Image (cartoon, rainbow, N blue to C red; front, side, top):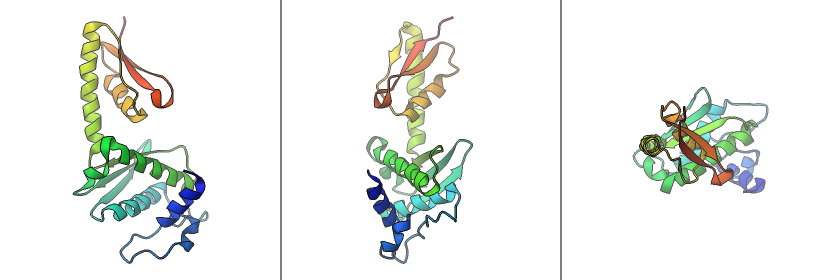
Length: 191
C-alpha cells in the first residue's frame, strides 16, 4: 500500500489532514481523530478512536477497549459477533493489527511500540492451543531425543511457544530462518 492510498483510507476514517475533503460523517459516527501536530493525543486514545471508527463501520454492536501495558498497547474488540471479525486463521485480525500500528506510526510518529489486538478472545484461545501443542511436542522430543521443527509461523505465535517452554527441564527452543520462513525448533536440552 503506498502512502497516497493510506492517506485516502485514513481520510475516509477521519484520521488525517486530508479529512477536510471527506464528506461529513453520519450523525451517529464516532468523532474523527484529528492529526494536528500541535495537539498530540495519547497513543492509547488514538488507537481506541481508530479501532472504534473501524469496527463501527463493520458492526455497530462491537466495543473496543484499549489499555497500556508495560510493553505494548493492547486492544480488545468484543461483542456478540466479534469472533467472526477475526477472520479465517486470524488473517483479518492480523490485518487490523497492521493497520492499527500504521495509524499510530503515521499520526503519532511512533514506530517502536508494540500493538496487540484481540477480537472475541481469538488470540487468547490461540495462545492456549499453542501452549498445549508446545507441551505435547516437548514430551515427544524429550522421549525421542530428536529435535522437532515446526512449520513457519508469525513472530507472535513463535513467542507463545518459546515462553511456554522456556523453563522446561527437558527441551529448549530456537527460531531459525528469515522473514516469513522463520520457524521454531524444539530440541532436547543437553546436560
